[in-house]
Amino acid sequence: MKLLSVKYLIDQGQKSFNRFPWVLISAILAVSFANYCVEFESSTVNLFPFINGMLVSALGISLFFGIIIYAEKNDFSKKQQLIMEIIGLTALVGIYLTLPNGLSSQNTAMPYYRFAIFSLCSHLLVAFMPYRKSMQTIDFWNYNKTLFIRLITGLLFSIVIFIGIVLAMMALNLLFNVEFEGKIFLQIFIFILGVFNTWFFISGIPEDFKEIELENTFPSGLKIFSQYILLPLLTLYLLILYGYCIKIIINWNWPEGIVTYLIISVSTLGILALLLLYPYRNDSGEAWISTFSKYYYYLLLPLVLVLFLAIAIRISEYGITINRYLIVLLGIWLTFTCFYFILGYQNIKIIPSSLTFLLLLASFGPWGIFSISENSQYNRLKSILTVSNSLKDQKLTQEFQWDTSQLPQLKPEGTQSIKLSLDSAQKEEVKSIVKYLSDHHGLEKIDPWFTQDLNEIMMIIKKSPESPRSLDQSRLYLETMGLDFSTQPFQKHHIIRAKLSRHSTQISGFDYLSPFHLNQKDSTIIYAGGNIYELTIAKDQKGLIIQHNQKQTKVFLNDLIKRAQVHSGKDKESIISPNYLIINSQDKTHQFEIHHIRYTENQEGDIKINSLSGNFLTTLGERK
Image (cartoon, rainbow, N blue to C red; front, side, top):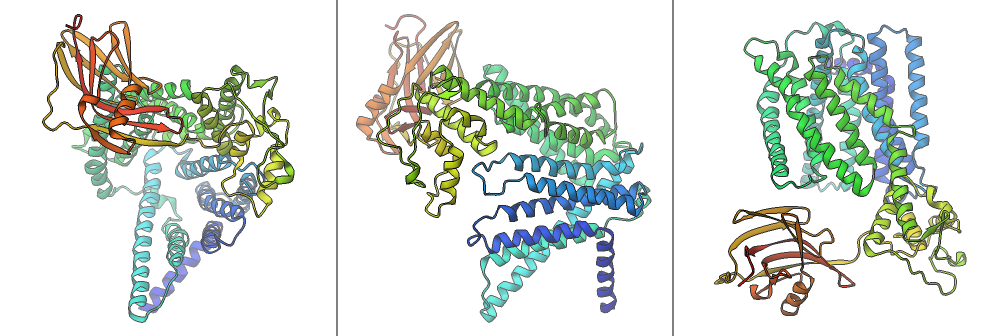
Protein backbone atom coordinates (compact mmCIF):
# COMPACT_ATOMS: atom_id res chain seq x y z
CA MET A 1 0.00 0.00 0.00
CA LYS A 2 2.87 2.35 0.80
CA LEU A 3 4.45 1.74 -2.62
CA LEU A 4 1.10 2.43 -4.29
CA SER A 5 0.84 5.69 -2.39
CA VAL A 6 4.30 6.78 -3.47
CA LYS A 7 3.51 5.80 -7.06
CA TYR A 8 0.29 7.78 -6.88
CA LEU A 9 2.16 10.87 -5.69
CA ILE A 10 4.74 10.49 -8.47
CA ASP A 11 2.02 10.04 -11.09
CA GLN A 12 0.10 13.07 -9.83
CA GLY A 13 3.28 15.13 -9.80
CA GLN A 14 4.13 14.07 -13.35
CA LYS A 15 0.59 14.79 -14.47
CA SER A 16 0.72 18.28 -12.97
CA PHE A 17 4.07 18.96 -14.63
CA ASN A 18 2.75 17.83 -18.02
CA ARG A 19 -0.27 20.13 -17.60
CA PHE A 20 1.57 23.19 -16.17
CA PRO A 21 5.21 22.83 -17.34
CA TRP A 22 5.98 26.56 -17.56
CA VAL A 23 4.42 27.21 -14.16
CA LEU A 24 6.75 24.74 -12.46
CA ILE A 25 9.77 25.83 -14.51
CA SER A 26 9.07 29.40 -13.40
CA ALA A 27 8.79 28.29 -9.76
CA ILE A 28 12.06 26.32 -9.92
CA LEU A 29 13.86 29.28 -11.55
CA ALA A 30 12.48 31.73 -8.97
CA VAL A 31 13.62 29.48 -6.10
CA SER A 32 17.05 28.97 -7.71
CA PHE A 33 17.63 32.71 -8.13
CA ALA A 34 16.40 33.41 -4.59
CA ASN A 35 18.62 30.77 -2.99
CA TYR A 36 21.60 31.98 -5.03
CA CYS A 37 21.07 35.48 -3.61
CA VAL A 38 20.92 34.05 -0.09
CA GLU A 39 24.04 31.93 -0.58
CA PHE A 40 26.26 34.45 -2.39
CA GLU A 41 24.92 37.77 -1.18
CA SER A 42 28.22 38.90 0.33
CA SER A 43 30.49 37.70 -2.50
CA THR A 44 28.44 38.82 -5.53
CA VAL A 45 29.26 42.34 -6.73
CA ASN A 46 25.98 42.90 -8.56
CA LEU A 47 22.90 40.98 -7.39
CA PHE A 48 20.45 42.90 -9.59
CA PRO A 49 20.35 40.32 -12.43
CA PHE A 50 19.57 37.52 -9.95
CA ILE A 51 16.98 39.54 -8.02
CA ASN A 52 15.33 40.54 -11.28
CA GLY A 53 15.40 36.94 -12.46
CA MET A 54 13.74 35.83 -9.24
CA LEU A 55 10.97 38.46 -9.54
CA VAL A 56 10.25 37.81 -13.22
CA SER A 57 10.23 34.03 -12.68
CA ALA A 58 7.79 34.47 -9.78
CA LEU A 59 5.58 36.56 -12.08
CA GLY A 60 5.74 33.73 -14.60
CA ILE A 61 3.99 31.40 -12.12
CA SER A 62 0.73 33.36 -12.14
CA LEU A 63 1.07 34.43 -15.78
CA PHE A 64 1.50 30.91 -17.23
CA PHE A 65 -1.11 29.49 -14.83
CA GLY A 66 -3.61 32.05 -16.10
CA ILE A 67 -2.73 31.35 -19.75
CA ILE A 68 -3.19 27.58 -19.35
CA ILE A 69 -6.47 27.89 -17.41
CA TYR A 70 -7.83 30.40 -19.95
CA ALA A 71 -6.82 28.15 -22.86
CA GLU A 72 -8.42 25.07 -21.26
CA LYS A 73 -11.64 26.90 -20.35
CA ASN A 74 -12.03 28.15 -23.93
CA ASP A 75 -11.03 24.81 -25.53
CA PHE A 76 -7.99 26.23 -27.30
CA SER A 77 -5.89 23.84 -29.37
CA LYS A 78 -2.37 22.91 -28.28
CA LYS A 79 -1.02 25.20 -31.01
CA GLN A 80 -3.08 28.16 -29.81
CA GLN A 81 -2.00 27.53 -26.22
CA LEU A 82 1.66 27.36 -27.31
CA ILE A 83 1.35 30.71 -29.09
CA MET A 84 -0.09 32.27 -25.92
CA GLU A 85 2.75 30.80 -23.85
CA ILE A 86 5.34 32.19 -26.27
CA ILE A 87 3.68 35.63 -26.01
CA GLY A 88 3.78 35.31 -22.23
CA LEU A 89 7.45 34.32 -22.28
CA THR A 90 8.24 37.28 -24.55
CA ALA A 91 6.42 39.61 -22.14
CA LEU A 92 8.47 38.27 -19.21
CA VAL A 93 11.73 38.83 -21.10
CA GLY A 94 10.58 42.38 -21.92
CA ILE A 95 9.77 43.06 -18.26
CA TYR A 96 13.15 41.67 -17.19
CA LEU A 97 14.92 44.06 -19.56
CA THR A 98 13.08 47.06 -18.07
CA LEU A 99 14.33 46.35 -14.55
CA PRO A 100 17.51 48.11 -13.28
CA ASN A 101 20.71 46.22 -14.07
CA GLY A 102 22.85 47.77 -11.33
CA LEU A 103 25.37 49.12 -13.85
CA SER A 104 23.97 52.59 -14.61
CA SER A 105 24.08 55.60 -12.33
CA GLN A 106 20.30 55.87 -12.39
CA ASN A 107 18.82 52.83 -10.61
CA THR A 108 15.34 53.74 -9.43
CA ALA A 109 12.35 52.07 -7.84
CA MET A 110 9.97 53.03 -10.65
CA PRO A 111 10.44 49.80 -12.69
CA TYR A 112 9.72 47.78 -9.54
CA TYR A 113 6.51 49.72 -8.95
CA ARG A 114 5.49 48.92 -12.51
CA PHE A 115 6.48 45.30 -11.94
CA ALA A 116 4.32 45.19 -8.79
CA ILE A 117 1.36 46.54 -10.77
CA PHE A 118 1.85 43.91 -13.49
CA SER A 119 2.16 41.19 -10.84
CA LEU A 120 -1.09 42.26 -9.16
CA CYS A 121 -2.86 42.47 -12.52
CA SER A 122 -1.57 39.00 -13.42
CA HIS A 123 -3.17 37.55 -10.29
CA LEU A 124 -6.41 39.49 -10.86
CA LEU A 125 -6.56 38.23 -14.46
CA VAL A 126 -6.27 34.66 -13.17
CA ALA A 127 -9.29 35.38 -10.96
CA PHE A 128 -11.73 36.55 -13.66
CA MET A 129 -10.43 35.95 -17.22
CA PRO A 130 -11.51 32.27 -17.54
CA TYR A 131 -15.10 33.34 -16.74
CA ARG A 132 -15.03 36.69 -18.52
CA LYS A 133 -17.82 35.66 -20.91
CA SER A 134 -19.80 33.52 -18.48
CA MET A 135 -23.17 34.88 -17.35
CA GLN A 136 -23.19 32.68 -14.22
CA THR A 137 -21.47 34.56 -11.41
CA ILE A 138 -21.78 31.51 -9.15
CA ASP A 139 -19.47 29.62 -11.55
CA PHE A 140 -16.98 32.46 -11.19
CA TRP A 141 -17.34 32.30 -7.39
CA ASN A 142 -16.88 28.49 -7.28
CA TYR A 143 -13.76 28.76 -9.43
CA ASN A 144 -12.17 31.37 -7.14
CA LYS A 145 -13.29 29.41 -4.08
CA THR A 146 -11.33 26.43 -5.40
CA LEU A 147 -8.24 28.59 -5.93
CA PHE A 148 -8.59 30.22 -2.50
CA ILE A 149 -9.02 26.97 -0.57
CA ARG A 150 -6.22 25.29 -2.49
CA LEU A 151 -3.92 28.24 -1.76
CA ILE A 152 -4.71 28.28 1.97
CA THR A 153 -4.33 24.50 2.21
CA GLY A 154 -0.99 24.62 0.38
CA LEU A 155 0.34 27.34 2.66
CA LEU A 156 -0.75 25.40 5.74
CA PHE A 157 0.93 22.20 4.52
CA SER A 158 4.08 24.16 3.59
CA ILE A 159 4.36 25.70 7.06
CA VAL A 160 3.86 22.31 8.74
CA ILE A 161 6.52 20.67 6.55
CA PHE A 162 8.97 23.51 7.18
CA ILE A 163 8.45 23.34 10.95
CA GLY A 164 8.90 19.56 10.83
CA ILE A 165 12.17 19.82 8.91
CA VAL A 166 13.50 22.54 11.22
CA LEU A 167 12.69 20.45 14.29
CA ALA A 168 14.44 17.45 12.73
CA MET A 169 17.54 19.57 12.01
CA MET A 170 17.51 20.88 15.58
CA ALA A 171 17.32 17.30 16.84
CA LEU A 172 20.34 16.35 14.71
CA ASN A 173 22.22 19.29 16.14
CA LEU A 174 21.34 18.45 19.76
CA LEU A 175 21.85 14.68 19.53
CA PHE A 176 24.65 14.29 16.96
CA ASN A 177 26.28 17.77 16.99
CA VAL A 178 25.50 18.24 13.30
CA GLU A 179 26.04 21.94 12.52
CA PHE A 180 23.85 23.86 10.04
CA GLU A 181 24.46 27.34 8.68
CA GLY A 182 21.75 29.81 9.58
CA LYS A 183 20.91 30.61 5.97
CA ILE A 184 20.07 26.96 5.18
CA PHE A 185 16.80 27.42 7.07
CA LEU A 186 15.82 30.34 4.85
CA GLN A 187 16.78 28.40 1.73
CA ILE A 188 14.66 25.42 2.80
CA PHE A 189 11.72 27.75 3.47
CA ILE A 190 12.11 29.34 0.02
CA PHE A 191 12.22 25.90 -1.63
CA ILE A 192 9.12 24.63 0.18
CA LEU A 193 7.15 27.84 -0.45
CA GLY A 194 8.26 28.16 -4.07
CA VAL A 195 8.39 24.59 -5.40
CA PHE A 196 6.34 22.35 -3.09
CA ASN A 197 3.57 24.90 -2.49
CA THR A 198 3.25 25.69 -6.21
CA TRP A 199 3.25 22.00 -7.18
CA PHE A 200 0.68 21.18 -4.51
CA PHE A 201 -1.52 24.10 -5.60
CA ILE A 202 -1.69 23.18 -9.31
CA SER A 203 -2.19 19.47 -8.52
CA GLY A 204 -5.56 20.26 -6.96
CA ILE A 205 -6.98 22.25 -9.90
CA PRO A 206 -9.58 20.07 -11.69
CA GLU A 207 -9.15 19.63 -15.44
CA ASP A 208 -12.90 19.42 -15.93
CA PHE A 209 -14.35 22.86 -15.25
CA LYS A 210 -17.84 21.36 -15.02
CA GLU A 211 -16.67 19.74 -11.81
CA ILE A 212 -16.12 23.22 -10.39
CA GLU A 213 -19.20 24.84 -11.90
CA LEU A 214 -21.67 22.16 -10.78
CA GLU A 215 -20.53 22.43 -7.17
CA ASN A 216 -23.63 23.35 -5.17
CA THR A 217 -22.33 22.90 -1.64
CA PHE A 218 -20.38 25.71 -0.08
CA PRO A 219 -17.80 25.35 2.69
CA SER A 220 -19.31 26.19 6.04
CA GLY A 221 -15.84 27.21 7.24
CA LEU A 222 -15.78 30.14 4.83
CA LYS A 223 -19.17 31.32 6.06
CA ILE A 224 -18.13 31.02 9.70
CA PHE A 225 -14.85 32.82 9.03
CA SER A 226 -16.58 35.65 7.17
CA GLN A 227 -19.60 35.99 9.46
CA TYR A 228 -17.97 35.63 12.86
CA ILE A 229 -14.43 36.93 12.27
CA LEU A 230 -14.27 39.25 9.26
CA LEU A 231 -17.61 41.02 9.80
CA PRO A 232 -17.06 41.82 13.52
CA LEU A 233 -13.61 43.17 12.67
CA LEU A 234 -15.08 45.16 9.80
CA THR A 235 -17.76 46.61 12.10
CA LEU A 236 -15.11 47.62 14.65
CA TYR A 237 -12.97 49.34 12.01
CA LEU A 238 -16.00 51.13 10.55
CA LEU A 239 -16.93 52.45 14.00
CA ILE A 240 -13.37 53.72 14.50
CA LEU A 241 -13.30 55.46 11.12
CA TYR A 242 -16.74 56.98 11.60
CA GLY A 243 -15.63 58.16 15.04
CA TYR A 244 -12.70 59.87 13.35
CA CYS A 245 -15.07 61.50 10.84
CA ILE A 246 -17.19 62.82 13.72
CA LYS A 247 -14.03 64.22 15.31
CA ILE A 248 -13.25 66.03 12.05
CA ILE A 249 -16.73 67.59 11.99
CA ILE A 250 -16.67 68.64 15.67
CA ASN A 251 -13.14 70.07 15.62
CA TRP A 252 -13.29 71.13 11.98
CA ASN A 253 -9.79 69.75 11.70
CA TRP A 254 -8.45 68.47 8.38
CA PRO A 255 -7.97 64.67 8.23
CA GLU A 256 -4.51 63.11 8.52
CA GLY A 257 -2.94 61.52 5.43
CA ILE A 258 -2.59 58.16 7.20
CA VAL A 259 -6.38 57.79 7.28
CA THR A 260 -6.36 57.08 3.53
CA TYR A 261 -4.51 53.80 4.06
CA LEU A 262 -6.94 52.81 6.82
CA ILE A 263 -9.96 53.54 4.63
CA ILE A 264 -8.54 51.52 1.73
CA SER A 265 -7.70 48.61 4.06
CA VAL A 266 -11.15 48.60 5.69
CA SER A 267 -12.89 48.90 2.32
CA THR A 268 -10.90 45.98 0.93
CA LEU A 269 -11.64 43.89 4.02
CA GLY A 270 -15.37 44.58 3.64
CA ILE A 271 -15.41 43.73 -0.06
CA LEU A 272 -13.54 40.47 0.67
CA ALA A 273 -16.06 39.56 3.39
CA LEU A 274 -18.99 40.22 1.04
CA LEU A 275 -17.38 38.17 -1.74
CA LEU A 276 -16.91 35.22 0.62
CA LEU A 277 -20.56 35.47 1.72
CA TYR A 278 -21.90 35.93 -1.83
CA PRO A 279 -23.41 32.43 -2.42
CA TYR A 280 -25.18 32.44 0.93
CA ARG A 281 -27.18 35.61 0.23
CA ASN A 282 -30.21 33.67 -1.05
CA ASP A 283 -30.26 31.06 1.72
CA SER A 284 -33.36 30.94 3.87
CA GLY A 285 -32.69 32.80 7.10
CA GLU A 286 -29.73 34.66 5.59
CA ALA A 287 -31.56 37.68 4.14
CA TRP A 288 -29.36 39.92 6.29
CA ILE A 289 -26.42 39.16 3.98
CA SER A 290 -28.17 40.72 1.00
CA THR A 291 -29.27 43.71 3.09
CA PHE A 292 -25.81 44.23 4.58
CA SER A 293 -24.22 43.90 1.13
CA LYS A 294 -26.32 46.77 -0.18
CA TYR A 295 -25.98 49.14 2.77
CA TYR A 296 -22.28 48.48 3.21
CA TYR A 297 -21.59 50.48 0.06
CA TYR A 298 -23.70 53.35 1.38
CA LEU A 299 -21.54 53.30 4.51
CA LEU A 300 -18.38 53.40 2.41
CA LEU A 301 -19.27 56.58 0.49
CA PRO A 302 -18.63 59.08 3.36
CA LEU A 303 -15.32 57.34 4.09
CA VAL A 304 -14.31 57.57 0.44
CA LEU A 305 -15.12 61.30 0.59
CA VAL A 306 -12.79 61.64 3.61
CA LEU A 307 -10.15 59.71 1.65
CA PHE A 308 -10.32 62.19 -1.24
CA LEU A 309 -10.28 65.13 1.18
CA ALA A 310 -7.22 63.83 3.05
CA ILE A 311 -5.23 63.01 -0.08
CA ALA A 312 -6.20 66.33 -1.70
CA ILE A 313 -4.65 68.15 1.27
CA ARG A 314 -1.42 66.15 0.96
CA ILE A 315 -1.26 66.73 -2.80
CA SER A 316 -1.90 70.48 -2.43
CA GLU A 317 0.95 70.72 0.10
CA TYR A 318 3.51 68.28 -1.31
CA GLY A 319 2.46 67.45 -4.87
CA ILE A 320 1.70 64.08 -6.45
CA THR A 321 3.84 61.03 -5.73
CA ILE A 322 3.44 57.42 -6.84
CA ASN A 323 1.74 56.48 -3.56
CA ARG A 324 -0.65 59.44 -3.66
CA TYR A 325 -1.57 58.71 -7.28
CA LEU A 326 -2.33 55.11 -6.33
CA ILE A 327 -4.51 56.28 -3.42
CA VAL A 328 -6.51 58.53 -5.77
CA LEU A 329 -6.80 55.66 -8.24
CA LEU A 330 -8.06 53.27 -5.55
CA GLY A 331 -10.45 55.99 -4.37
CA ILE A 332 -11.91 56.20 -7.90
CA TRP A 333 -12.22 52.42 -7.99
CA LEU A 334 -14.00 52.37 -4.60
CA THR A 335 -16.36 55.12 -5.75
CA PHE A 336 -17.20 53.21 -8.93
CA THR A 337 -17.68 49.95 -6.99
CA CYS A 338 -19.98 51.63 -4.44
CA PHE A 339 -22.26 53.19 -7.06
CA TYR A 340 -22.25 50.01 -9.16
CA PHE A 341 -23.74 47.95 -6.33
CA ILE A 342 -25.91 50.77 -4.94
CA LEU A 343 -27.60 51.05 -8.34
CA GLY A 344 -28.59 47.40 -8.08
CA TYR A 345 -26.05 45.65 -10.30
CA GLN A 346 -24.88 42.32 -8.88
CA ASN A 347 -22.07 41.02 -11.12
CA ILE A 348 -19.19 40.48 -8.69
CA LYS A 349 -16.76 39.96 -11.58
CA ILE A 350 -16.73 43.74 -11.94
CA ILE A 351 -14.63 44.01 -8.75
CA PRO A 352 -11.39 42.40 -10.04
CA SER A 353 -11.95 43.35 -13.68
CA SER A 354 -12.45 47.08 -13.01
CA LEU A 355 -9.42 47.22 -10.71
CA THR A 356 -7.28 45.46 -13.33
CA PHE A 357 -8.43 47.88 -16.03
CA LEU A 358 -7.62 50.95 -13.94
CA LEU A 359 -4.20 49.65 -12.86
CA LEU A 360 -3.16 48.73 -16.40
CA LEU A 361 -4.45 52.05 -17.74
CA ALA A 362 -2.43 53.96 -15.12
CA SER A 363 0.79 51.99 -15.70
CA PHE A 364 1.78 53.80 -18.90
CA GLY A 365 1.33 57.01 -20.89
CA PRO A 366 1.48 60.71 -19.97
CA TRP A 367 -1.62 60.22 -17.80
CA GLY A 368 0.01 57.33 -15.92
CA ILE A 369 1.34 57.03 -12.39
CA PHE A 370 4.98 57.52 -13.27
CA SER A 371 4.73 60.47 -15.68
CA ILE A 372 2.30 62.46 -13.55
CA SER A 373 4.19 61.93 -10.27
CA GLU A 374 7.59 62.71 -11.79
CA ASN A 375 6.34 65.88 -13.49
CA SER A 376 4.60 67.03 -10.31
CA GLN A 377 7.75 66.76 -8.17
CA TYR A 378 9.95 68.16 -10.95
CA ASN A 379 7.71 71.23 -11.25
CA ARG A 380 7.71 71.72 -7.45
CA LEU A 381 11.51 71.60 -7.39
CA LYS A 382 11.77 73.94 -10.37
CA SER A 383 9.33 76.40 -8.79
CA ILE A 384 11.20 76.54 -5.45
CA LEU A 385 14.58 77.09 -7.13
CA THR A 386 13.20 79.63 -9.60
CA VAL A 387 11.41 81.73 -6.97
CA SER A 388 14.59 81.82 -4.86
CA ASN A 389 16.65 82.85 -7.94
CA SER A 390 18.70 79.65 -7.66
CA LEU A 391 17.57 78.58 -11.13
CA LYS A 392 17.51 80.89 -14.16
CA ASP A 393 16.98 79.94 -17.80
CA GLN A 394 17.07 76.23 -16.91
CA LYS A 395 20.52 76.56 -15.31
CA LEU A 396 21.57 76.68 -11.67
CA THR A 397 23.04 80.04 -10.76
CA GLN A 398 25.57 78.34 -8.48
CA GLU A 399 27.04 74.84 -8.31
CA PHE A 400 30.16 73.18 -6.95
CA GLN A 401 32.63 72.20 -9.69
CA TRP A 402 34.15 68.85 -8.75
CA ASP A 403 37.79 67.99 -9.26
CA THR A 404 37.53 64.84 -11.42
CA SER A 405 41.15 63.94 -10.71
CA GLN A 406 40.18 63.35 -7.05
CA LEU A 407 37.32 60.93 -7.76
CA PRO A 408 35.88 58.82 -6.20
CA GLN A 409 36.35 61.40 -3.42
CA LEU A 410 34.15 64.46 -3.91
CA LYS A 411 36.43 67.47 -3.70
CA PRO A 412 35.66 70.86 -5.26
CA GLU A 413 38.11 72.58 -7.60
CA GLY A 414 40.02 75.25 -5.69
CA THR A 415 38.18 77.30 -3.10
CA GLN A 416 34.45 77.56 -3.73
CA SER A 417 31.52 78.69 -1.65
CA ILE A 418 27.81 78.73 -2.36
CA LYS A 419 25.23 80.87 -0.59
CA LEU A 420 21.73 79.76 -1.51
CA SER A 421 18.85 82.14 -0.94
CA LEU A 422 16.70 79.38 0.54
CA ASP A 423 15.31 79.31 4.04
CA SER A 424 15.60 76.15 6.15
CA ALA A 425 12.11 74.93 5.18
CA GLN A 426 12.84 75.34 1.46
CA LYS A 427 16.17 73.53 1.83
CA GLU A 428 14.47 70.56 3.48
CA GLU A 429 11.83 70.54 0.76
CA VAL A 430 14.46 70.55 -1.99
CA LYS A 431 16.30 67.67 -0.29
CA SER A 432 13.08 65.70 0.05
CA ILE A 433 12.13 66.19 -3.62
CA VAL A 434 15.60 65.31 -4.96
CA LYS A 435 15.72 62.21 -2.75
CA TYR A 436 12.25 61.15 -3.95
CA LEU A 437 13.12 61.68 -7.63
CA SER A 438 16.40 59.79 -7.21
CA ASP A 439 14.74 56.83 -5.49
CA HIS A 440 11.69 56.54 -7.73
CA HIS A 441 12.25 58.15 -11.14
CA GLY A 442 15.89 59.07 -11.57
CA LEU A 443 17.36 62.54 -11.95
CA GLU A 444 17.85 62.68 -15.72
CA LYS A 445 15.19 65.37 -16.00
CA ILE A 446 17.26 67.88 -13.96
CA ASP A 447 20.60 67.00 -15.62
CA PRO A 448 20.35 70.02 -18.01
CA TRP A 449 20.40 72.34 -14.97
CA PHE A 450 24.06 71.47 -14.31
CA THR A 451 27.13 72.43 -16.34
CA GLN A 452 28.89 69.18 -15.37
CA ASP A 453 28.03 65.67 -16.48
CA LEU A 454 26.95 64.30 -13.10
CA ASN A 455 26.01 60.93 -14.62
CA GLU A 456 29.60 60.41 -15.76
CA ILE A 457 30.93 61.48 -12.35
CA MET A 458 28.54 59.05 -10.66
CA MET A 459 29.62 56.17 -12.91
CA ILE A 460 33.29 56.80 -12.09
CA ILE A 461 32.47 56.79 -8.37
CA LYS A 462 30.39 53.57 -8.60
CA LYS A 463 33.05 51.68 -10.55
CA SER A 464 35.83 52.56 -8.15
CA PRO A 465 36.59 49.98 -5.41
CA GLU A 466 37.37 52.93 -3.12
CA SER A 467 33.93 54.45 -3.61
CA PRO A 468 32.36 55.75 -0.37
CA ARG A 469 29.42 53.46 0.49
CA SER A 470 27.35 56.41 1.71
CA LEU A 471 27.59 58.27 -1.61
CA ASP A 472 24.53 57.83 -3.77
CA GLN A 473 23.04 59.76 -6.64
CA SER A 474 20.89 62.14 -4.59
CA ARG A 475 23.83 63.08 -2.37
CA LEU A 476 25.96 63.94 -5.41
CA TYR A 477 23.25 66.18 -6.90
CA LEU A 478 22.44 67.88 -3.60
CA GLU A 479 26.05 68.57 -2.69
CA THR A 480 26.65 69.92 -6.20
CA MET A 481 23.80 72.34 -5.52
CA GLY A 482 25.45 73.34 -2.24
CA LEU A 483 23.06 71.48 0.05
CA ASP A 484 23.95 69.06 2.82
CA PHE A 485 22.85 65.55 1.80
CA SER A 486 21.07 64.65 5.03
CA THR A 487 17.33 64.43 4.34
CA GLN A 488 16.73 65.19 8.00
CA PRO A 489 18.74 67.87 9.79
CA PHE A 490 20.72 66.61 12.76
CA GLN A 491 18.41 67.02 15.67
CA LYS A 492 18.03 65.87 19.25
CA HIS A 493 14.73 64.89 20.81
CA HIS A 494 13.89 66.35 24.20
CA ILE A 495 11.10 66.00 26.75
CA ILE A 496 10.51 68.42 29.61
CA ARG A 497 8.02 67.46 32.30
CA ALA A 498 6.65 69.56 35.15
CA LYS A 499 7.08 68.22 38.67
CA LEU A 500 3.40 68.14 39.66
CA SER A 501 3.54 66.40 43.01
CA ARG A 502 2.13 68.75 45.70
CA HIS A 503 1.51 71.38 43.03
CA SER A 504 -1.59 73.59 42.74
CA THR A 505 -2.30 75.85 39.79
CA GLN A 506 -2.54 79.57 40.59
CA ILE A 507 -5.74 80.85 38.89
CA SER A 508 -5.82 84.37 40.29
CA GLY A 509 -6.85 86.87 37.62
CA PHE A 510 -8.41 84.26 35.31
CA ASP A 511 -12.00 83.07 34.92
CA TYR A 512 -11.58 79.58 33.45
CA LEU A 513 -9.06 76.75 33.56
CA SER A 514 -9.13 73.86 31.08
CA PRO A 515 -6.63 71.03 30.57
CA PHE A 516 -5.41 70.48 27.01
CA HIS A 517 -3.26 68.08 25.00
CA LEU A 518 -1.90 68.81 21.53
CA ASN A 519 -0.02 66.90 18.87
CA GLN A 520 1.74 68.43 15.91
CA LYS A 521 -1.22 68.25 13.50
CA ASP A 522 -4.04 68.08 16.00
CA SER A 523 -6.26 70.68 17.63
CA THR A 524 -8.24 71.04 20.86
CA ILE A 525 -11.53 72.86 21.31
CA ILE A 526 -12.10 74.57 24.66
CA TYR A 527 -15.45 76.02 25.77
CA ALA A 528 -15.29 78.81 28.35
CA GLY A 529 -18.22 81.06 29.32
CA GLY A 530 -19.98 80.66 26.01
CA ASN A 531 -16.76 81.30 24.09
CA ILE A 532 -15.00 78.77 21.88
CA TYR A 533 -11.19 78.62 21.74
CA GLU A 534 -9.34 76.37 19.31
CA LEU A 535 -5.75 75.55 20.26
CA THR A 536 -3.23 74.28 17.70
CA ILE A 537 0.52 74.03 17.34
CA ALA A 538 1.72 76.60 14.79
CA LYS A 539 2.75 75.33 11.36
CA ASP A 540 6.36 76.36 12.01
CA GLN A 541 6.16 74.37 15.29
CA LYS A 542 7.53 77.28 17.28
CA GLY A 543 4.47 78.15 19.33
CA LEU A 544 0.75 77.85 19.96
CA ILE A 545 -2.15 79.38 18.03
CA ILE A 546 -5.31 80.50 19.88
CA GLN A 547 -8.28 80.93 17.51
CA HIS A 548 -11.21 82.84 19.04
CA ASN A 549 -13.98 84.15 16.78
CA GLN A 550 -12.07 85.82 13.94
CA LYS A 551 -9.05 86.66 16.09
CA GLN A 552 -5.88 84.59 16.02
CA THR A 553 -3.26 84.89 18.74
CA LYS A 554 0.17 83.28 18.59
CA VAL A 555 2.11 82.44 21.73
CA PHE A 556 5.79 81.76 21.04
CA LEU A 557 7.35 79.05 23.20
CA ASN A 558 11.02 79.23 22.18
CA ASP A 559 11.96 81.64 24.99
CA LEU A 560 10.09 79.50 27.53
CA ILE A 561 11.98 76.39 26.39
CA LYS A 562 15.31 78.21 26.46
CA ARG A 563 14.59 79.39 30.04
CA ALA A 564 13.55 75.86 31.01
CA GLN A 565 16.81 74.51 29.58
CA VAL A 566 18.76 76.76 31.93
CA HIS A 567 17.20 74.91 34.86
CA SER A 568 16.92 71.44 33.31
CA GLY A 569 19.96 71.37 31.09
CA LYS A 570 19.73 69.83 27.61
CA ASP A 571 19.18 66.29 28.74
CA LYS A 572 16.98 64.06 26.63
CA GLU A 573 14.37 64.02 29.37
CA SER A 574 14.13 66.23 32.42
CA ILE A 575 11.72 67.22 35.20
CA ILE A 576 11.55 70.80 36.52
CA SER A 577 9.26 72.99 38.58
CA PRO A 578 6.07 74.05 36.75
CA ASN A 579 6.86 77.63 37.76
CA TYR A 580 9.40 77.70 34.91
CA LEU A 581 6.81 76.46 32.39
CA ILE A 582 4.25 79.29 32.53
CA ILE A 583 3.77 81.75 29.68
CA ASN A 584 1.18 84.45 28.93
CA SER A 585 -0.22 85.74 25.67
CA GLN A 586 0.87 89.25 24.72
CA ASP A 587 -2.41 90.83 25.89
CA LYS A 588 -2.22 88.87 29.19
CA THR A 589 -5.75 87.43 28.73
CA HIS A 590 -4.49 83.86 28.23
CA GLN A 591 -1.96 81.81 30.12
CA PHE A 592 -0.45 78.39 29.50
CA GLU A 593 0.89 76.22 32.30
CA ILE A 594 2.87 73.51 30.49
CA HIS A 595 3.04 70.09 32.15
CA HIS A 596 4.71 68.15 29.34
CA ILE A 597 6.44 69.28 26.16
CA ARG A 598 8.19 67.20 23.52
CA TYR A 599 10.42 69.01 21.01
CA THR A 600 13.44 68.67 18.72
CA GLU A 601 16.48 70.93 18.47
CA ASN A 602 18.99 70.94 15.63
CA GLN A 603 22.64 71.98 15.62
CA GLU A 604 21.72 75.61 14.96
CA GLY A 605 19.50 75.71 18.06
CA ASP A 606 16.29 75.77 16.03
CA ILE A 607 13.49 74.35 18.19
CA LYS A 608 10.38 72.61 16.86
CA ILE A 609 7.53 71.49 19.09
CA ASN A 610 6.01 68.05 18.49
CA SER A 611 3.49 67.78 21.33
CA LEU A 612 2.59 69.38 24.63
CA SER A 613 -0.03 69.32 27.36
CA GLY A 614 -0.99 71.35 30.40
CA ASN A 615 -3.59 73.88 31.56
CA PHE A 616 -5.08 76.73 29.55
CA LEU A 617 -6.27 79.70 31.62
CA THR A 618 -8.33 82.52 30.17
CA THR A 619 -10.24 85.59 31.28
CA LEU A 620 -13.29 87.01 29.55
CA GLY A 621 -12.28 90.59 30.19
CA GLU A 622 -9.07 92.39 30.99
CA ARG A 623 -6.94 90.56 33.47
CA LYS A 624 -7.21 91.97 36.98
